Length: 304
Image (cartoon, rainbow, N blue to C red; front, side):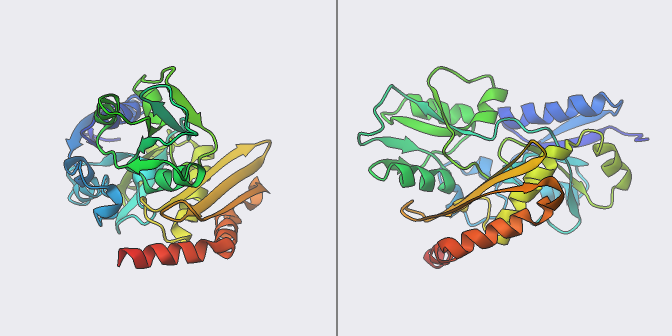
């Protein structure tokens, strides 16, 4: 089938390697040989500048895209929330693994009364905007780096807490009693899911990847990513979207927030699974009509 080992590209962080090994285990269970290839991304090399200020689409994926197009790797494993909705020509999303938790969590440095003035750290515009929407009296500071680096910075600071993706912490076995699940916060599109990108003309490989593709996760994350694409928001835009399947229906919640968190346009929808393909467009249209268009236009002009 494949004479040589499949070269699996991954970012060179502990979490990225762990997620790549999850893919390795699934592929080797199908009797495929694999080889990990670690590649540094722009997002890994620049740990001081906020992601949204770097001016690059796919700060965590571009280096792996180039490696795929140059035939230096056969697959690239990503946290799907980092993958731009528009892939470079010649590449495709080959499979999506079963999703972990989509939730964000607050990791607290010490037990704090969040009704009081507090400092919270995050490198995400989406998290910052939603946090300020709920806690306008708080101060939000930038926090970059891999999970361990961010944890170390938090616990050596005087901040009240920092926001992380629950799935990553669970995969690294870092969940503890000092965590507070933020069920009210709308996750990033595709948060908690692992995506596998490959060359679009690798038909046999794409066929093999369907064996490890989790279709319910793929269906839900496709809706979330379509919602993001229609709103023309990059991975760092203050846009949240979450879809899940319950009792043969797709539940969806999505929204867009102003940078300061003062204004929000949010929608919640429930549809039968057989009409789910139109859900993203319907939800995006509703959000835009509720003020999302003005929010996004203001953000666009603020960056020019």
